[in-house]
Picture 1 (cartoon, helix red, strand yellow):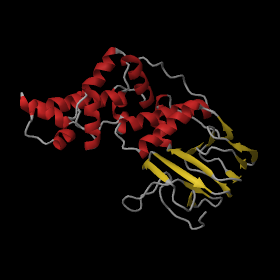
Picture 2 (tube, helix red, strand yellow; picture 1 turned 180 degrees about the horizontal axis):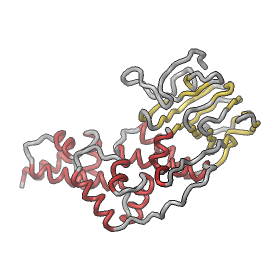
Picture 3 (cartoon, helix red, strand yellow; picture 1 turned 90 degrees about the horizontal axis):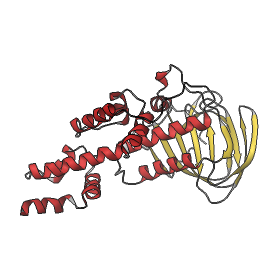
Picture 4 (spheres, one colour; picture 1 turned 120 degrees about the horizontal axis):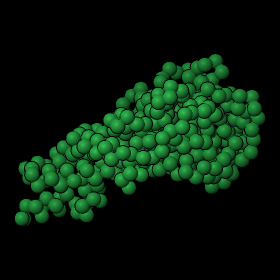
Length: 316
């Protein structure tokens, strides 16, 4: 690990265009350092929101350090790795087993040694992302989290992190709203697993018909815009996690899938009404994040490529 101090934002750094975000730690003197000196095998994230790294790490150790944000480790290797750790001075040892999780809460001190090659995903969620997803403002109290370094299982949380990894390392065709929905679900699951403070009980997953109409009208009216989960949740005065969960329970569709379907329908109309427009212009006018996403979603919802549909319209 490097010993040279640096001063980037705690959640990630983009000192140069295209630089991948990185996870940072603080040593015992409070200096901010890269989690590991080498670049991650894979890295993704959104500044101020989250960082997801895949690392293949040789056997070694790290002295006492803390994170400014919560960090979750998901091992990917197919064999167990022996470890010894100290969390705030408490000794923990055992085996890092594939399919298990390790969680270090923001501000807790960790010193650790591992005796084999670790291949794992490391996810940090910013405090702001957690607060938005959990709607901490609703009762004026933030959730308090406690570290759990002993390897433990949660198939739901593991699946969500792997889905986020698959999305960030793929072609991102599901769009930012899908990414935000995953982050909200991860945040809520972390609350279930690692919260040590008491929170006021949240309402169940019901969404009144008027809120469904309000959401759908807002999506249709802003179809060309970069709709976000936070924006849609604020429109109906709900937390991002609960609006996504309640919308699915009320309509049978995920919110991000509904938005993509609306964009695909709008694209169908645009091709008919504006035959002079290029397909790239249609994609932009309907709010698709990329041309490849436009083609994939048009085919998914209409069973035909947009170019094929345009030719069929021209023959009419």
